[in-house]
Length: 414
Image (cartoon, rainbow, N blue to C red):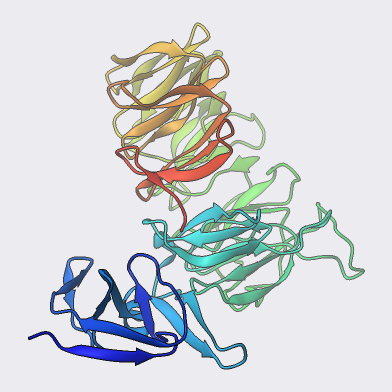
């Protein structure tokens, strides 16, 4: 026999799975006997699950808290407030998105909003912190938040600060409160304290305790330091951060490029006109180099793996490298075999998680490693490479910003 209960007033503490009609008075309800599963796991409620006129109602607080939300009763106004709980996320689990209010916040990979949009600028999390900007004007000032959205470093830095290996290179206003693009900036720790007194025109990421720094406005006069600011190397004209134990360096006198190891020993002599150093990654032991106005690829023994025949080469990534020849782009492998034909007007970046961004004319699309389109080229599209399982998409045609997964499914913040 079914148990029948009578509920007075507003059904406070209960929520409908369909539509909830609020009203005062007496309501006849039936206690439901079926099971409730949340994310595949059965949920045992302390309060009863009820049915009213064919609709099912769950206890509000228990349901919301199970879904990771904060529930608060506000006596003034007699209302219940639900807020998404930040939870215990790592920075790698959070993605920047722009809300309907035009501000930036953070969501998880399922699209659940973790940090509500309130920032004018927002960077990805790095080393547990993310650079954000509020009240952006001509002089944007950045601070840092943790994964709960709490401000841990104040809005006093003149450019986004990204931590790695516990330190970040950070610029502040001058003592006179002025904004100076060329004022030396300093390394700070996660408490905002200076790591050491020396400042630099440019400071790279620390990687295993080593960073490249320079005193030139465009990265000239570079050398390497440790976390105490101690100088570890000679001065180069330019130098990249280390990647998998190697870095690219440009000779101060000849302006030719070579490769050093972590002992700052030259393992490939200064002989190349240029080495690909934008977002340099020494992946799969191969490096793109320029000689006599043509690009080729060498290994770490200086053996030429791909001959000098291309107008441009990117990083070797996931077994393929973007190549430009006769004003067209395609992809080749380490044996110089054309894997994806030279059909594109431009390739944006390297393969990442099995996909690359290409363009034909004014249209951008996304291809897999066989050249098959995940997203056909369209005008007014912007993409960012797959990162941690998701790709950012800005579709100006539909005036939508969202992420997609590897199957092309939309992930929309909610």
